[in-house]
Image (tube, rainbow, N blue to C red; front, side, top):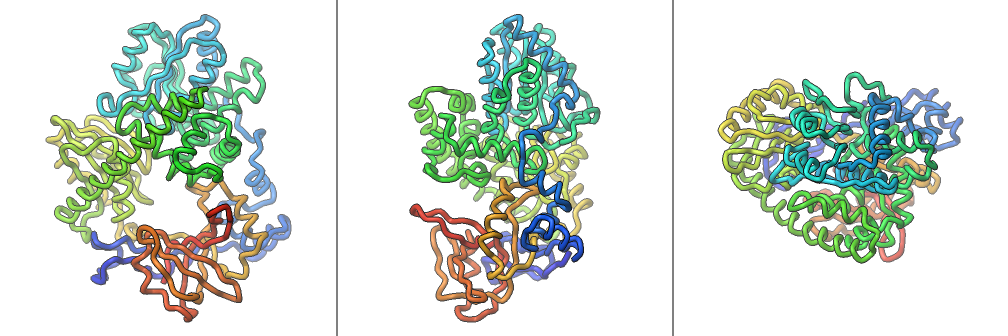
Length: 592
């Protein structure tokens, strides 16, 4: 591993010289780190066996792919590589109970979370059971009134319609009291979740969660919709249904998994790859209506389009209102209804963006006035009246800006609801666990979590959480790393390299788009600012000229000196689709 000194991305000439410390008016500085290169013999061996350029072999090594067999598994992503769903603990119990409900014509109640992962899981299970001829109902809790997870009101709703089986998706693993209530009301519960279990497990008929200590399922990082998909797969197998039956829902699995930012490795990569293929075949009315309303018609949909364009629109209805509308969008067989609901999501997303921006400005002001980022290694912000539906998004933006673990708490009538987001090397779920005496409840995973707290406990929690961060994080942990796969010269970017790089998709956590460093580039002509502070220019090396664009990097324009071959640049290679034409461009991550 080669570490290159800090690269300053600053908006203010008053640059702070203390390592790892930034001013609120500055963007976080990035430290370029070139991934350790494989041994020459091993690299040559993989290059020869796969008949690929060395630069591509290096990227495979960076992803832990060291052999022909591993590369074959990675690139082909065949259906046959799906794991046996019955390797998941309690799967046999869950399948038998569902089939029993089907045989007895019992009413089934599908209960899910209000984010994209939960919404897609509910939609999939609802459609699957409905298509088997069952009387099935779905329920998404109200974010503001009920909060995250199984709720007593949701369980009572199931009882009011005389449901005999409740299946939770993307939630339920900590719902000990709610499952007990369901049992009292004569309702069996199957939990399908992917979050960390609490100290005690609910007394459900079956608990499907790869993160259970007792579960030997070989892949632990499925999204909530991924776990629910394994249940659908297992039921299909048990009933002897055609394989196409469970594959029908793979687009929903891809949508929910990509939106939940799960690691795109192993089984997740297979599920998302197959799901994106289906999405791009244009055959689910709700998804296509969403794509059209977002102005993405005739564009290839990848994980980036899901995360930044489609998912926020689905999330918006759950953040600001009733998320059941999103389920209706994804399950409708009416083209007109799909378009109507998609237009509602579009409007609510615009409202959500406005609320986001106002909350973000208020959060930055609080940090400016209340925190010293020279010494504070975590941030806990709270305010009366913040919309609980947007604080998670804003917390993520704050982390991006200041690179500190951040908790944002919305307070109303003495109760605080919070969202926590983390940085590399800081397990925020574990940190909250160390502060649980201050909290009414919490849940989540390593990089994102939610919590509830009494307003009079916020100050105590803030100091305790900051103390945990100060003890855990060192100064160097607070400098964001920009990981570089390899150095490359522009003439090395051949058609074959581009074709092979595209095969690495879908991109996401632990399989990000390959990042390259090229040194001593020449800037061709004048640079210009476009859109909202985006930097656009051309670079040349060895006779090759490429367009480059740096989104939100306008403050670095002063570093571009036309004619001089003195520019070092870290970037990814992308295809830019514009006006019916496709052209390669280098998307800049940093430069100096």
